[in-house]
Every structure is written in C-alpha cells, then in structure tokens.
Picture (tube, helix red, strand yellow):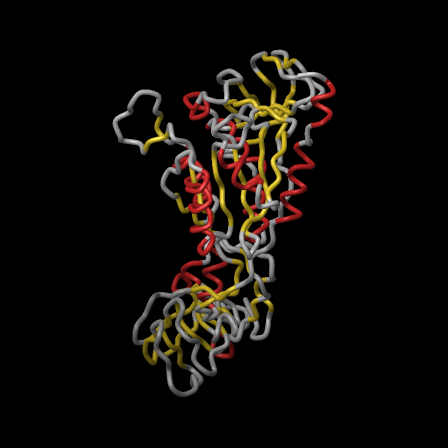
Length: 413
C-alpha cells in the first residue's frame, strides 16, 4: 500500500476516540446485591447502621470488671464466680456484679458492666469459678460498637467497582439492593451465506461460524451480557430486519462480515443508507475495514467488524472492550501494555499498527510470536494470550527487541 493510501486511513487512536466519544454511560438502576458483581456503583452508599452494631467479644473467654482483677498474676491469680455463659446471638440481662464474670463466646454481646474480655488462655478454664492470671486493658478483646463503620458513614463511593468484598460490606450494613450501572446487553450477529452453525455438516464452500461464539464469550467474560443471534445470510433486507429486530433489547450491536469492498458486503450496503454508520479503513493489521455508528431511535452503538476471525477478535480487544467498559462506568481508554522481550523476529507493514499474536510469559517478561499475519489463523489465535503492538513506523521486530504487549489473559487490562 502506498504512502498516499496510508495517509488517507484513520489512525487507531482516532477511531477509538470516535468510539468513546459516541458511546454513553448506561443509566443507573437498583439491582439486588446478588446481581451486582463486577458492576460500578452509580451513587455513594451510606451506612444506616454501625459495625459492629454492638460491643462483642473477639475471643472465647470471660467478660470481667477490671477492678476485680487488680494485681492478678501467675503466682497470685484473681478468682471470680462464673455466673453463666453468653453465646453468640444471646443477650445477658442485667449488669455484671462485683466479684463475678461471665463466660463469653466469640461474637457474643458483651454484658453491661463488663470492661474487658479475658481470653480463656489466661485462665484455668473454670465453669463455676475461674482463676485469672493476667489483667487486660480496658476494652481489650472487645470489638467496640462502630469501631469499623459508624452509622452515617459513606462506606463505598460512586465509581467503585463491586466485587465479593464490597458486596460483603453491603450485606453487612443491611443493603438488599445497590444503585449501579447495569450490564450492557450486546447483541452479536454473524453475516455471510457461507456460514453454518457449528455441528451442522459442511457443504461445498461452507464454514462454521466461529465469530459469533467467540465474541459472545468475550462479552460475557467482561461481565456484560452477550446475546448471540443466528447467522444472517447475504440478503440486504434480511440483514436490516435482523438488526432492527434486536434494537429493543440491545445496548450495543456487533456484526461480523460484509464490511469490505466486495459485491456481497451487505452490512456495508444496508447501513450506509442510514447515514449514521461510517465505514472507514483504519491503519491497523489485522482489522483494517471498520464500521461504527448508531442505529435506531435510541442511537444504539453498532460495530461492524471484518469477517476474518482474527480481525474480528483483535477489533473487539481494541475498540469494543473499551466501549463496553465506558458503558459500565469503568475507566476507559487505550488498552494498557507491558514491556516484554520478544523472542522471535517478524516484519510489520509500514504505516499500520500491527497487533501480532503472541504467547506472553509474565514470569520471564517475555513474549513469543505465534502464527503468521493471516487473519484467518484461528488455531494460532487460540494459542495466543497476548497481542504484540508494533507501531506504525516500525517495519521489523528483531529477536531480543523490547516490545509493547497487550495481555489478553492472566495480566493487566
């Protein structure tokens, strides 16, 4: 490709900016806390209660008054009468009297009048009377009311991504629901009369649809909701009807195939007439033909990706993943990279940013190219766990060069 043709192509960064300037954060909704793992809080969460909600024991032992233990030591233990037991979930009525104590279990409410808890290890373990050989500090071994969270505290701020620990906190303060930006619903359509469903006997000229399952799985792995639609043939009206039928349940639509310059590239043919989807060449390999815009009254974002599986998957990683993250309220931008030593040599086209498949070793901080440039090589794509990013001005990577790597699995975003 000539320098003038390269100059007419859109850069990867400019195309990503167009995408991120278009997609919008999804409106918040209240969801049960059982359904918010991976989602982002839309509002601050204020606790209505204190944690702990009452003074409770952090050990198994004896609830005591400090005055009764004055001078207690190994050679002169204090002896107290044991009034009974306080188990977790039970309450002792009344105030602890001088010269007495209560056997108390971990998590049980500390009785009125008790000023500390003596661990059972500091005693002879008596049940009717107990000999205590050490004097605790005031409130020692007591989890004091509100020492973790005070009623009225902001416990989680808007923008926090919820995981198991945050969901545990919500449950602990009694939250049943949480205000979050919901999971985007991403409809995935594969187009092409040559495609058949996996498991169907292949006829002459037919291939299995790998893009639909792969991209749907990639969406689901992000915490969004992937909705795979059946294969659409190379019929313009059928393609248009299929897309329009899905808009009622879609926050985003992704199509593969039909976006190049061939006679049967019907996705490009159909959507070009709407005036809201732009088809362009992006200075990247693989994935040069890209389409992006909005469809329907609600201006649903739509990505039209090349049909070659490597091109489609790389396009997902570079453009769709950041778009979904923005819709979910996750900080977005270009994919982060790590620097690694490349064990292997390969060439790269001038003027294009190449995303070469690689196997990244996080322990050795190294990467090894896998496969060739072909955008149909799904076997090599399956082996790869990273993309080696070769800048537009670099035409050759030499064995031992330091390269930038996007880690797709087992590494940073």
